[in-house]
Every structure is written in C-alpha cells, then in structure tokens.
Length: 214
Picture: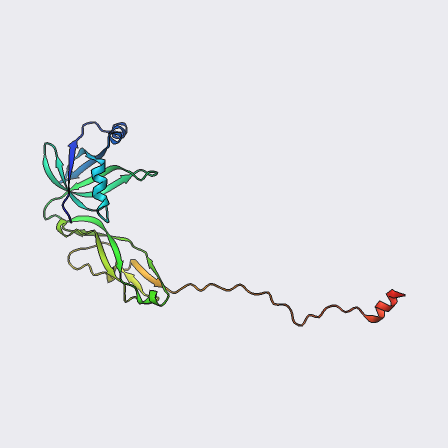
C-alpha cells in the first residue's frame, strides 16, 4: 500500500463536549491503542484524513502517524465512526502496528470476470462483500479478487472455494456463501379473461312475446 503520513497531536481534554469543539475547528478525535498499553488520545486534521480515505477503495488501510513528542508510528485504521446523517467522520480508532505480528482485518471481495451463467441470462448475487482475515501487515491489500467467470446458473461460491493461499487465514466457516448465480426470473403473464364461447345470448320465446303483445 502507498505510504501516507498524517500529522497528529496528543489531546488531554476528552469527552463528548470537547470532541465536538475539536471537530468544529477542523480536527478529528482519535485514539491509538495496541501493545497492551493504555490508549493514547490524539487529534488529526479532518481534511487530511478524509483525503487519505478518498484515495483508497477501503477504509481498512495502514498509514504513518507523525505524533508530536513520540515520532512516526505505523498504524492500521481499525474503525471509522461516522455521523448517522451527514456521514462525516467523527472518531477514529487506530491500531499500532508491530512488525511481524499478524493483524485481523476485513478485506473487500471484488468479483472479477463475467460469469457464464450471467451471459446465459442468470443473475449474479454477491452475498459477502468483505471477508475477515488474519495476515501480516506487509501483506495487507485493499481487496481480494475473486474470479467468477466460470460460474454457471445454479452455481454457488463458498468461502472454502476462495484461493487465499498462505497469505490470509480466516475463521469463517467454509460453507459460508460468497456469491451465487440464480436463474433468470420469469414474469408470469396475466391470465386473459376468456369469454365463454358456449354462452348464447338470451332469446325471448316468440310465444311469450306474442302474449305480451296482446
């Protein structure tokens, strides 16, 4: 992944009210944790952090933090909390990276290729859009490509079918469904109301008609 460095400052004042004031000044409250130590409260420039995410397909990424009084720290963006209405980032959890120590992350699954079943009119249904894996920091990628070109109508792709190699390990059950190709839906034609061909118009009896005429 591309190395990007963010400038960070330690913050002493915490709590929701202080966090709101911090965000109003264009800064983003965050914490760095790891190594079994107490989390360090910091602040980042909101615009710089959003720009970092803008240039990546996933929010799960590794970046460098230049923290005043501490130096450069390699961290994993572990969790980004966003405002439920505006969608703006309001808090970030960062995990300190330790060389040679595996990390647990969610990596996007990207389906590549056009399935044979789709060419035949079927519908591709991607059930799982990311997968939880464990890997070394140096092996972290933004997405894992999954070739679905040979899937036919009725085929189901499971976690056990993914080629994760020795780079990634997952605790998900092998039978968990990643994607499937369903048969095309056939719309039922509305039943036409057929007239009863055997029905004949009512004929007034001639004799009765004559009697009524008298």
